[in-house]
Amino acid sequence: MSVLSAPHFHNEAAAIARLEEIVWPQGPHCPRCGGFDRITDVRGGRAGLRRCGPCKREFTVTVGTIFERSHVKLHIWFQAAHLMASSKKGISAHQLHRTLKVTYKTAWFMEHRLREGHFLMGGEGRRSKSMRPTQVGGKRTSTAASASIWERAARARKLFFLWSSTAERFALITSRK
Image 1 (cartoon, rainbow, N blue to C red):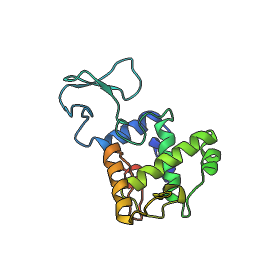
Image 2: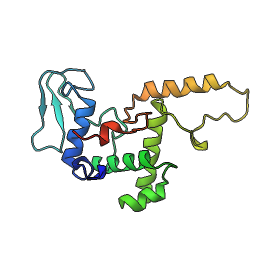
Image 3: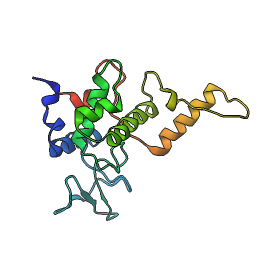
């Protein structure tokens, strides 16, 4: 049985359930107030939509992750993440476009978000030229100063990325129960 035959790679509801298992192991909590009590499902709303009782805000599991504010289905994100992690030499946006049957613009967007999340969360590997900190003109900054800029960006954005730096990358997404 192939890893890609797992239900969270083909079914949106299964993908949402899988991400909820990963992000909320103790159960759902509000990203705004942090409350665990009185979290309810919104009836008639989109899949995975929840409401916090104390602050009355609606949220989904994708809030605070690289999947936030994206119109791409979550199971497509999981497929792209798996393809990027399993390819030895990387994968181009054009190859993602052909494989996932999405537009090139969508594939480019997904690839950049996945790479940004990987590097901002301390992933290993080579950083492409477009992602290296660059200073044009003026006094040259040290590498340590550049690293601190990346660390501050990661803290500010609070991105969540499902990348493992071990040989079994994306172990959380691709693992079987």
